Length: 312
Ligand SMILES: Cc1cc2nc3c(=O)[nH]c(=O)nc-3n(C[C@H](O)[C@H](O)[C@H](O)COP(=O)(O)OP(=O)(O)OC[C@H]3O[C@@H](n4cnc5c(N)ncnc54)[C@H](O)[C@@H]3O)c2cc1C
Image (cartoon, rainbow, N blue to C red; front, side):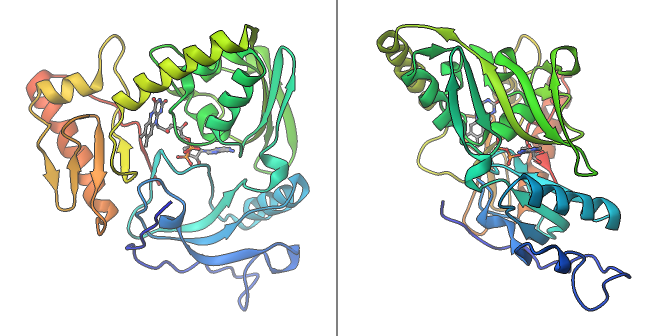
């Protein structure tokens, strides 16, 4: 991914207990300071993280998470960065990325599929289709990781990931690991109740189907997904969730929002539920544009759109 860094610098949070170093120095982990988050977001914009770490295993993650909890250092997990907007001022806490191989595995245990939170969604969909397991092919074309998809119950017209989820292994803020199943899991449109934890892995229940038929269906779905997304640039983000029974894109067009822009951020005219950021776009322009479009839809149509992209 082409990355652009045009946010401002942040200082990691000072810690009274560690005046000379960082609160993580004794953990034996590779923690970097002032990491440009523009290197990790789909839009390629935004400021720095105070601290950044890619733990090598669950134990390392647990030590890091527990230390953040003890020291009151705010923590975010970043997946593919396709649904977050980092302010130009950055995020003065810890950002964790589950990129180590142990977090990215995909294993077929027919008719189940186990996937690590850091696995790319596109790899999981392909693995399922190749194994002749259906249920995920409607997710083809959605960028990001399994962790991000579970947090926001990613999906589209044909269904969402939550429909297949049977088990999720998570880490709590104190570093303990637990497995959630059945009634402890809730998925609704672009929402899940996993917002209190770090997702480590999941088990998805799929259906056996002829791999050839499944591949053809995924290819068709892929063509539809490509047609519904902006092409020519990766510096785009989806602005709003579809309100129940209608389309955010149609509402933006109907309200006359298709040509709106703020500074270096503009509505992507051909797919009006996306914002496109120019190479030197401050992320505050993106934020202001989303609010402008939202206000226009509210004034013209009386509909309150809910932002899809999450502002850190
Ligand atoms: C071109 C384009 C098309 C898109 N199309 C769709 C679509 O059709 N349907 C759809 O639903 N969405 C769509 N999206 C939005 C986005 O791709 C999804 O929301 C995706 O699931 C986000 O995954 P991610 O890994 O990039 O998450 P990120 O953007 O990295 O993070 C999103 C949220 O998940 C949290 N998170 C990530 N990983 C973990 C973890 N392991 N544990 C705890 N929290 C975690 C982050 O902290 C953040 O709160 C689209 C976005 C773009 C740019």
